[in-house]
View: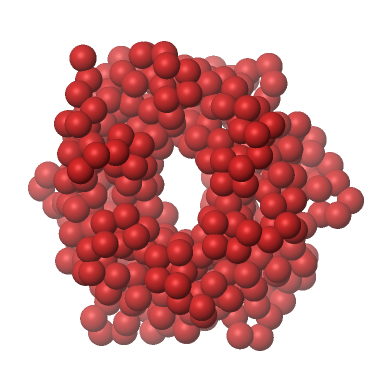
Length: 397
């Protein structure tokens, strides 16, 4: 029998451990903000570029943690993150946020990746939610307006992935080197939805609600494979699928984020639809579970190739997604999956030597070496959010 009170206490303790690491190691005391890269043995790379995704996720994390715990120390780091982000990452000429700045805080890679705009919007709206800082709210609304102005496709619906600094056409739209060069992607749409939902909590406008409803429709009609329950990852501008790759982590993350969006706008029809989707997608994601409770990274059906790695972030999302599936369905197996994910993390992903979580493990649970502990993609967002979600969902003191 899984004891929910114990589950919650362990999540609360883990949140404090994660944030303790970031408060101790991540601040850049020389140039402001946060260090752009720290390796797996906690060596800071003080001249590394600073990523907008990293910094917006730090801002979201400490803002949310302050809102949830009312720990005044977290507010100090949220304030530090917000002030640095607004000063250095927001483009004063063309709007939107840069992909990276250098260690001095000056523009480095000026492309406008819509994924990055979404996380900035997500973080700034969370900071306002926690603090009622009007500057952050206005910055978030401005990002919403600029995404709609330049990224939204009025002909076919959905959002184009990336642009140059001045919002012109960009030849290479990829978010990372491993991605397809596609006009529209699941990942960007998922995080626009997440960001718009967070903004709706503090700015419940009708146009924003309509955009959230449209995004839910894109997922239902195009992005979720009706045959398999998995997400389709890459599309051309006409919503033709460009990939068959399965990402188990994104499956289980979307399983609960779609439902959260429907609940945020309080739409009974979409709540019912997304609850069904949550179960369908949790079942699909569970195909990627190993016998030790860990969630494999990716699978390519065309070649039957399983990427036998277990990265940190799918494990965090598995806790929330499977717990949510249990809450919706009452099926005990999903609660067990959530607990097994946490047990796997404690044994294999949490770094008891250097703190925080390792990037991931290979088959046989051999730690992946020479990976960032802090970096462009290694952030406190997935794991801290999982802790806060379970604290909220279980409730109690």
